[in-house]
Length: 127
Length: 127
DNA sequence: CCTTGACCTTCCACAAGCTGGAAGCCCCAT
DNA sequence: ATGGGGCTTCCAGCTTGTGGAAGGTCAAGG
Image (cartoon, rainbow over all chains, first blue to last red; front, side, top):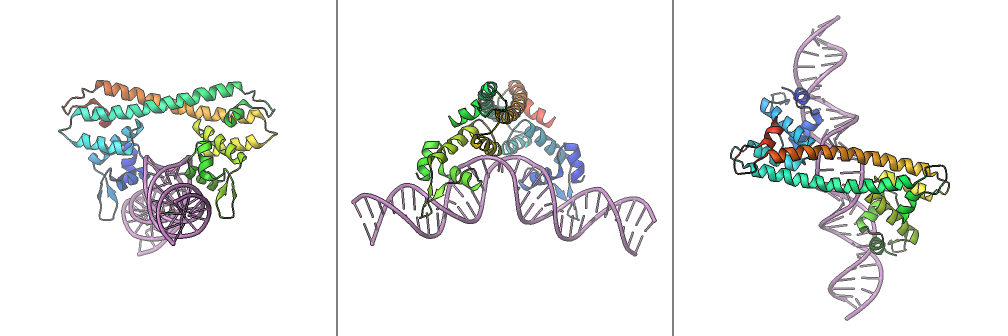
């Protein structure tokens, strides 16, 4: 199967698939004309990647997840540890964003939002 | 004042300050030897930038905020609108992260995390 | 057989927001 | 004069792709 078809099936644009090959996440065969040929196994890897990325795993983590996926002798503890680290990072981001949101909401509420120049938001930023 | 001192006072590393100059957020004077000289006004701009960035505003938004800050005839409505757009983006990010977090938490809970290879996390990713 | 359009290929540049490092100048103290 | 620190510029890299240009390939229609 060609790149655009595997792209449709996996839900990834061809550009992204080429990029994933470039960084070694997949290694499709090549036809005599130089075209990439994707096997069912390549398709599965790509779909796996799409879902892992959608969960916010970094490309490096995806690499590790794929390695674990292909390792029949893996320990599920290793996968769980990876997922836990990732979730810890997400929790940290959530906290930071919630903190920003809270401050912003306060500032926005305190601003008249009319045509006068006086603005608590700018005053706060300037301190 | 020199770059490292203004950096300490504004809470920004010299590298970042040079970068901000490069992209036109500040324009410090230069000494005859080529060294940057920062005025109190430069310091205020830098501190403003640090706080705006800490609230998650993009550099482009910071540019607009600084312009509004320096415009005596601004309407606070414009500042408020900027802040509202930004908060909307933050809310979107929060939603996405919360969704990821929820899925991840489910997967993590369902995984034994022992030395056996069977793993619901990988199964879900592979679908 | 030739053309046309839709593929495919590679390579380069850009996005955000810095950060690190190298090479070289400058200033002050010893 | 020598050493250490600070300053300068420029280049490269991080992450995760995206957009575009130049050019090869393939299948269908005239």
